[in-house]
Every structure is written in C-alpha cells, then in structure tokens.
Image 1: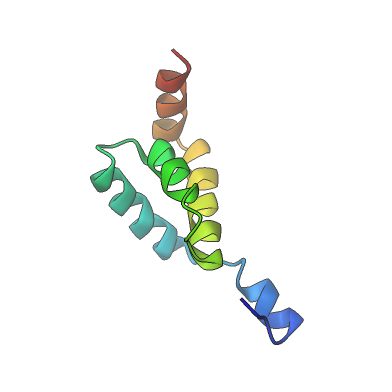
Image 2 (image 1 turned 90 degrees about the horizontal axis):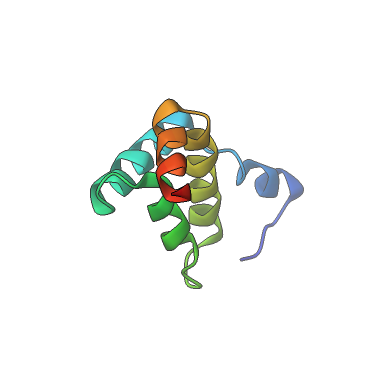
Length: 78
C-alpha cells in the first residue's frame, strides 16, 4: 500500500468508535462471543489489509479495557 502523504498515513491509524463497536459486534457474532480471540485469529491472516489490521488492534485495545474483555482474557488464561 502506498501512502501519498504523511497526513494520509497518520489518518489511517484513526478508527472511529462506531466502527470499532460495529466490528466488535461482528467479531462476537462470528466467533461465538470470543471477540478478542476472534480478532487475534483474523489478524493472523496474511491477506488482510493494513486498515483492517489497525481496526482489529483497536478492537482488542477497546475490549481489554472493558469488563467483558477482561472476563474473556481471564477465561483464556485457564
């Protein structure tokens, strides 16, 4: 992917909260409520776009700060 300007490159890292929430919902649906695990699995795909990788990282960051995300992480540690 070619970025034409530093501004465009920086903007690509900003993901709106509504987009993060929508992706969180979609991941939860696709991965039976395991949002963080689903984001990590889908993030390993070598064919995903740069923007999607940033979105998945934003979902993980958002979920690890939530009670549901911490509960999921605790389940995974068992």
